[in-house]
Each structure stands twice: as C-alpha cells, then as structure tokens.
Length: 355
Image 1: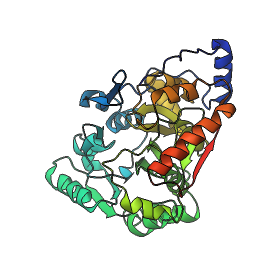
Image 2: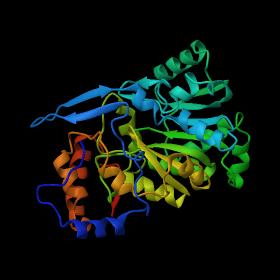
Image 3: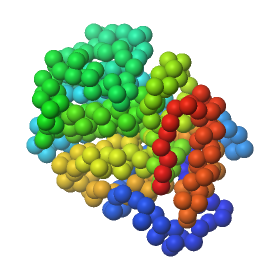
C-alpha cells in the first residue's frame, strides 16, 4: 500500500509544517530511501483484504549488505569481517523475506572473510543454517549458530558468554563501550521486542550498519514499541513465525529516534527493515549515494510501498499518518493496537505509544 492523500485532504502547507515539526531527519528523503517492493511487492486487491505478493531477488540485492560492504571498503573503511544476526532463522529466508546477510555471506566473495553469530529460537531452522554453511563454497569462515530466546534482559549476557570467544573485544566493551565500530553488521528480526534488544546490543558494542525490523502498520509520527515483561515469555513460547503479527516490533518513528539517540541515521527502508548507518560513516554514504543525512523519515515512509497487516486497514494507517493533530489521533491508534494485542494474545505484554 502506497499512502496517497486521503479523501479529506488536509491543507498541504499546514500538514507540511506539522511534518517538519515531527520528523527526526532534516534533509529530503533520497530516491534510495523508500521501500519500493524489494523482495516482495504487496498490492491490496480492491474491496478485499487479501494480498498479492511478487518476488524479485534483483531488487532485493540492490539494497543488500553486499552493496554496503562495497561502499565502505571503497571509501577506505576497514571491514572487521564481523556480524551478529539475531532472528537469523535458516540464514537464508524466503522469496517473501530474504535474510539481510544471505547474499553477503553465502553468494559473494566477501563471505569467506566474515565470522559471526546467528541466533534463533528455532532449532530446525538453525540446523538448516548449519547445512547451508557446510554446503556453500562462499560460506563465512566461522558461523556460530546459537539456539536461544532473546529478550532485552538476556541478550547482553548471552553475547558475553557465547560470542566473546569469537569476539574478545565484547568483554572489554562490557566495562567500557568501544569507541569504534568493531561490528560490521547487526541484524535484529525477532517479531517481538526488536528495538529493545537492538538498544541493548548497541550499548554493548557499536556496529557500522544495523538492519532493524520495523512495524510499518504504525506510521510516523507515532512512536510504538512492544516491550518485554515476565509474562511475555509465555506468549513467545506459543509464537510461530509462520504468522504475521501486527502488534509487535517498533514503528519507524520509534526506531529512528531511538537509533538517533545512539548515533545512527536512517539510510533506507529495505523489505521489512529500516537500515541505519553509524553517524561516523554518514559522509561515506552521502558521497556514494548523493544524499544528505539525516533524511526525512516521514517523506521516506510516505513514498514507500508498505507491507502492512490486514488487521490494521490501510485506510486507518492513512488517516493516522496524515492527521494534522497526532495527539488527537493517539486515542484511535491506542485503541486499535490494544484491540489487535488482545486478538494476538498480547494483552498483558506492555507497549509504548507516544508522538
């Protein structure tokens, strides 16, 4: 769904002024920023709630981690050959959602230079990942599959206990966070408390590039994030990643502001992810892509082809996004997210929602 102006179109100059007040990025969104149906294009059938899905690996690869590695290396930025992939599944993904690091690690000349950790709660998926490593001639020189349920309270200890033998600098970072980015790529895609987990990892170690899954169905400027709590474990134990859950993750606005506080800028939207670059490398991508950072995330969102959940109709998303008074619209967003949470078994799991 591409968000066009609603039937009751707000006065453009007033809405633009409101958008300028709410956005994090001050510069125009580059042509690269929007999500334009990379690995899948989602089209709502008129007067129906079903989806038509088109796959396209070529478009997926146009925003791949391989490209970003080339840009960094071409600018003289040394790559450490390191990654942490939280929610890695089978390390490949599907035509509906390719793993962000699949091409880099298994189909490019860079793969053999990398070592890292792939974490998932699904043992069968991790066995498939191990099989992929064994069968691929371009596989990473070292990939440690870890079966674990990850939450904000456990991820730091997990990495220090299991990943530190591979990355000794993690132990040093635990007492004094590293000044430079020793981690090349961080991916967080766990369909739950993604932003909270990403924050914990990035407070432990700095990454050059971060792929963070976002909930497109909660538009800017609303800052939504599902939090973790003791009761969340029971819900998570019943979760199946074959079901698309609407009321989890975090919104683009929440992710952009959180990452901004940590020193990262939105580079582009890619499939179900928002991709961020550490601000010390911003000039590299500004030169490579002819953009200025930080860029307007609201414009980036508006220009995107979005994959959203049919539990929250696109008409609602359009009304929320184009509202000239987000504070007045907050009750509607809260009510819908609360209702969807109840349907999805998340009533007792807290979430944050602000503008």
